[in-house]
Image 1 (cartoon, rainbow, N blue to C red):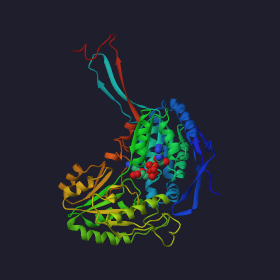
Image 2 (image 1 turned 120 degrees about the horizontal axis):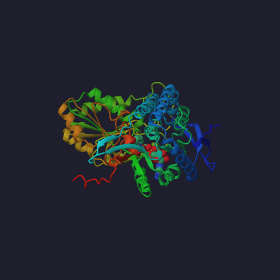
Image 3 (image 1 turned 180 degrees about the vertical axis):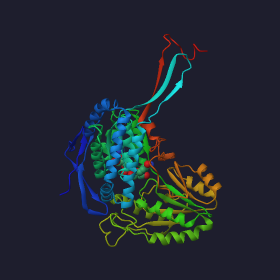
Image 4 (image 1 turned 45 degrees about the vertical axis):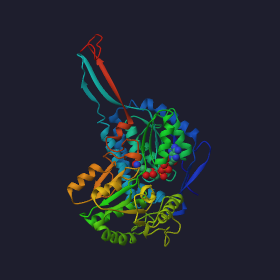
Length: 495
Ligand code: NAD
């Protein structure tokens, strides 16, 4: 019998009011049920928002350094349980253990960063233009934050949002992805153990069209922090406009790695293998396109094909596995459909191209690491986010040509250039249209204390991570104190 999990609303573990539930299965072995979770609806969201609203009135008054103390405990608890959390995550969504350990570590880093930030939520004191008048600005919490997350970073992404939200004095209604409800539930348990008061964080499990839309449309939710696909992000933007909520959108990508003719090819090879096939290509920052300079094209391709064929697919919990499964059946079908698209568009399939079979793979959503060459910028496989282990290879004659091809997408999240020429590196840093650019490193590898986000249709201009996320979760309040004892009119009495 599968273990049953619940929502956490107003400090209590409860079922969905409808009594409905959904199953979560291991993508490396679909016969293994990880657990059953409440299939919630609007009525559950209403309860959670009501509780979060009431809790906000107390929580906003707790001094930020006291909230910091809880964040520090949270980091300690997560660090102590890192291995267990990583194993649980691999079982739930498939990526290999080294990567799920990294995912948990990102949450730990985010907790400790938040702990420091509680003593550093600086405002500014500035001179007033009038005598005997004091002027300052300060950050204040906003209210109830709706947090809606995807499945590919089940621990890191929720912590990127919830920890700064809570540290800033907001309360939270959290809806995790249906593919990763277990990791999300454990995270909430740990938050309670660390001392976050009841109802400051609430979790409501269920589908996007039921729970997600109810959060976004709720008049008492003040802000929504969303990470997921561009298509859903656009819908959320429209839905949130009804109540003029503040919305942070972190969306899709079609990231590229450029390899110039002067690059260290071995280094570039490690970079692209990690970027394209790490997390089975299911990262928003995954390397989905490789742009090779003509002069090294043949040599690099032969190195790449050789190494790709050696990648070992399997259960991420087993030592020696390089690439895990796709997260579910629908994701693998998407990957398969793009293999057909690539073939029809006239690209050349050089490695992979099929659902993987073999020992230990028959009951999982495995797909072979796949590479297409002869890809042109106009092809769909060069433009659309696939979110799976498919790499499209394009050619370039020069750096300018390569950057033009890299920029030829509606997205702008991550990017990478391998070159030994400092002039080329700085030109690329300036001209690439992306929120993140790596020089001589893969497109994946963001660190928790730096701004994270993209340009163009990857988002709406906000940044997660580091100090920048605190701009989203706080409001600026400006305060003037006039101690002159008389009416002083700005811009009038002083000129
Ligand atoms: P998704 O958009 O399908 O779902 C994300 C979340 O939104 C889920 O919790 C889902 O239930 C919910 N949702 C779905 N429809 C909704 C609606 N109408 N209203 C409110 N909520 C709704 O994305 P996914 O498949 O879980 O994740 C993959 C996508 O996430 C990829 O496009 C990837 O690039 C993107 N992603 C982006 C970043 C980033 O920081 N830019 C990071 C990770 C993943």
